[in-house]
Image 1: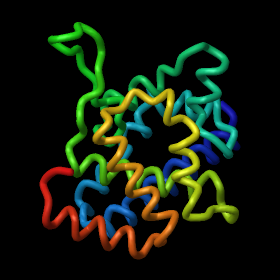
Image 2: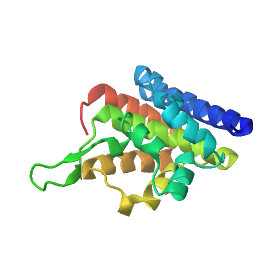
Image 3: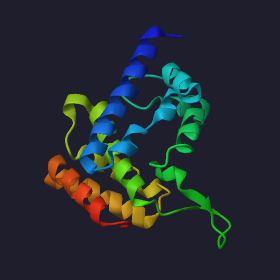
Image 4: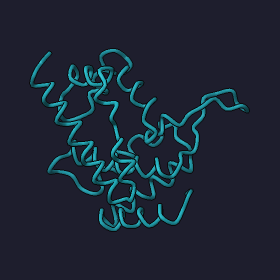
Length: 181
């Protein structure tokens, strides 16, 4: 095992997790944030993360490019409800895998996660427009419930236009007064 990759991956996922916890605090879901991405420390996710670590993007992308799939990602998305990929099921009508509308608190965590990931991977070049750019880049290919997609995009646009302080304060207030979006 490459020690530099081990150290780099551990540092990246821990910095990311701590940034998400801080964002969850600002959004008013601190306790939920404490459980964020704990599965990344499990051997099923951690060891491929070390093997495919590059430091500037998710190791899952590299694993996927080499193998055609990512076992680490499949493990991760199946255990973490803040990923829209978790929220799919077979529709009784279509008999196909369809997106399911995410509960509000997991959309909020997904927003916190996307902001933190953009900051970690973009470093000093980060701007509040980066999470929206990333979202829009893959929007046409994404299998996400339309209402979930609209609400997340609204939050990301708000971040890009009004900034982090305003958006997290708004989200905190929204979570305090709404059960759905």
